[in-house]
Length: 480
Ligand code: AHR
Image (tube, rainbow, N blue to C red; front, side, top):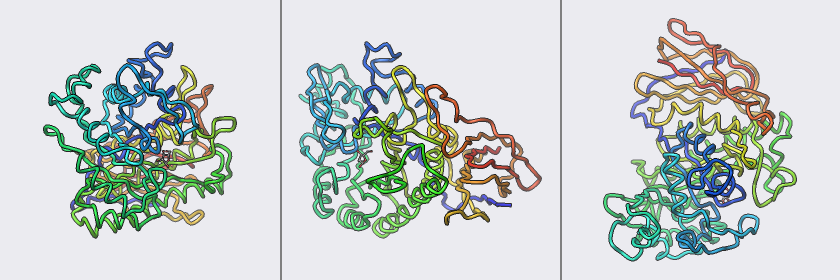
């Protein structure tokens, strides 16, 4: 029998709710169609924002949303997206289509208002200027009677938005300017200087971090700019095969399934390695590691625009979400935010849309199952698991405690197994489960083919608990 032992930690960190964050870029049908349909659409909406998607986001208490990119951020000029006359541009990163800037600052803030989430705005460093960024911060956050603030008033918003989270550039080692870390760290220092405090809103400044593999980038950033940052990002995508041929989102055999999991599990090692560098320069762990892009990147669905990154989402993706969130929880002493890419219709989405239809993906349901971890105290979890497949253990686990309730999430990658759970001392237990073949997914004809159910295969004994986990299942247990 496999075994999980749970215990309290000394100086246990709190799992930041922003680890359950999301990301929406002007890419394919993420913003337009996926989120924003316009006031005149026949699709039910409030101020142009589709209500089905907002309701779905609210149900998982989506805590924070990053926007407008990604690569798009480093070509985005925020003034193009305010006022009556919006400038049209070509979205050179994503499909070369015309971006008419209908969705801009006010629309994004309206989306966050409707969802009830925190905005995280990523500014343009690659092709923007310090002044442009400084004025965006002023436009959003100042209540002074300046020309820039008057523009905001003219656009219908009297009160400052008080945006706290600011990303200074995106992937500036690549699409954001092909900079060397020595150069970017100076540019970063300059930009962040003018990301000003207005009133009592002190900006949380996030510097562009590594692509995952590049430890040198983190080393240089920490050595030269640590005292000027609150967060340092890290991007990591799970690509099953190669970047040239990533593999299909839905057609794969069991070997590729395990390969995907193995690649996804690597983020644990990356966080540890980058975290060790951060620890040398910031032993107090003041600076957050911000994993603001992560998730599975598969080949696009056949017949779709290759620049739109539209992919289906199976139980395999749900497993990747489950194990990744377990890893982020376990590293919450350093990881303060994570944003899965991307919210709707792009990469590992929580929702897919087709006209007025919307479906929730298996990945969505993982975020639903894991809600108990948000803002909870991290618990220690020891896993003794007999079965190893393709070099990986069968179970991925994390646990947390809020008031008297313990949440334990377990992803069982392969065969049915029974686990003994020690250390919970509970009187009551309830559970939910998501299960299915790794190749199972939801379609617009069968939107609930993969969806959570209540889980009853769990027994409380005097000093331990036993749970029978079906093959390929993700279980969230709640103990009181
Ligand atoms: O999420 C898609 C793209 O992946 C983002 O725009 C970019 O930051 C990353 O390379």
